Image 1 (cartoon, rainbow, N blue to C red):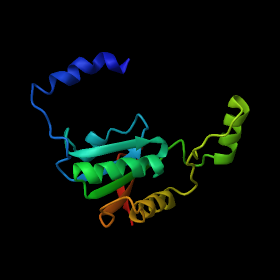
Image 2: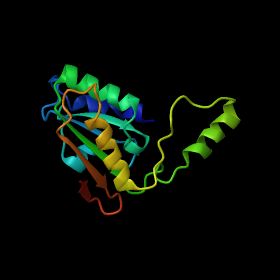
Image 3: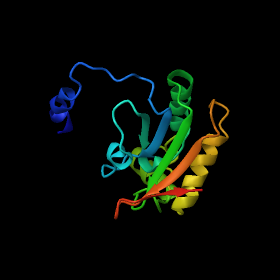
Image 4: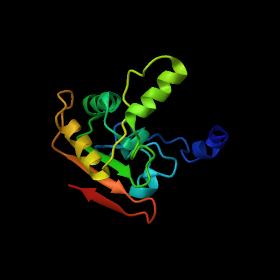
Length: 158
């Protein structure tokens, strides 16, 4: 289990503490996919960014909450949204998944699964949700990208 590997991680710190506010001033929103290591993809060190992950790297109320806290209390001024090729949420039928949950539990979830059909459009939609949020202090430095998990490339979505 991953928690068993924690001692090796702790040894990297050597008593030094990275500051809580990210040194780049950037918050990264990306997918929880285990194949994505944002530190490797973007050459990050501990303390460089606030990292927010969920299924699909979609912007929902939870992400807006985290970005609000990141901006108001940790001084971030930029947001990078990174979704990826081969995501399990890409092509997910929200209604069918909600029905599956209803059948299993007897109730519908209070949240949307976040499935999307067009990857670039999903990134653009996520960027617009951030740019239009009344809860965020900084909405002018929002960028989006698609990570290709086949060849490792990243391309910006405009």
